[in-house]
Image 1 (cartoon, rainbow, N blue to C red):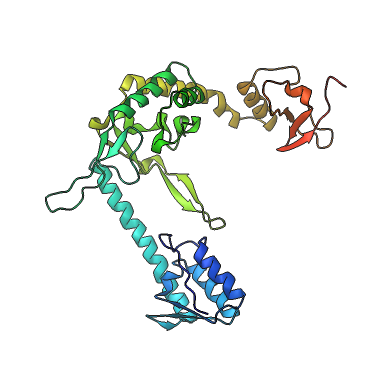
Image 2 (image 1 turned 180 degrees about the horizontal axis):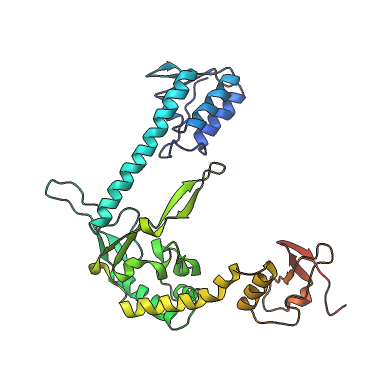
Length: 328
């Protein structure tokens, strides 16, 4: 049989691709006896993955033939695998350097425009596109100011998101608002309330992404503050400095309730977090599982109904049947 396997617009540095996985599955089923590829890097650009694919196909009695090297052997796998991996690393370095140059010139490094801004498409004198230009969207900018004002006045991100959705205000990329979109992560600088661009500062390289070899997903890691790049872009300021600082003060006040949880015993941290989240009630901190002695909390599908009366509890992440305290 003759069949084509492809993974269009997907990085060759990952094995988590439908095409390559389908090829390996068909190889084990004995559906073909040769793989023809334009080059070895079309199969994978990762040294470990190239070797793994080669070993699996060889075990199945299948050879790899490329248009440039002919039939692939162990020497090709070692040399070309190393060269392809270095190419990927060199490309990442060049891309990173180009993005840094744009940021230092006051232009966005990469990615889509943040909420409140739009991408400006224009050409230079040579007809080449000018990348990284942004402009303020007045309607969205007013929503950003509203979010900052309401948070500074004491409203929670969840309340703000609920009200915006109730009024039919579209969020980023026309999605509904959620509290995480507003709250974000102050350390990484994500979320509406932590985007320094609203304060007229273009912040870049605060975090990097590392691919998990077990799952293929990208994991965010915070860079040292010495590697962060900040550039003043006053023409893109949406929130005035006084409002920005008020929001920062409230965030620090809330963080002060949680950060101390990293100090002390496990029981002390759990107790402080519990008291921070909810007031003490009749069974708070007293109900435990009779089998594993783990802590329990009440789970109810209907918040209007008494959760205790339902006799359903969650123990260590598992929903189990409990004893109705009123019947005890």
